[in-house]
Length: 107
Image: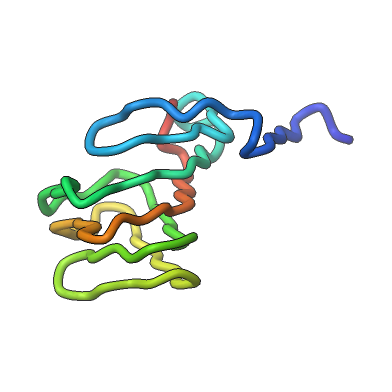
């Protein structure tokens, strides 16, 4: 395998408290040096206001459901948000786990 390739197994990563939920940080890179990939776990208390990031994000709903603005996404849904595009509020009233890919976000 190429030395620049990074790998992880979800069962070997610790789930840590972050912001409004828990996160498993699968792949982390320094800002501008590649993607950060994580699984976010949100519960009914999740209420993230409208915001934007200077990098693109991709969310894949693993289970449960999440609402970005007025649209609810269920397991199997993919949401791509370009850099600098506001989205939210974000809520997960029934709970959700999501895979997040953020290119160039930085650890």
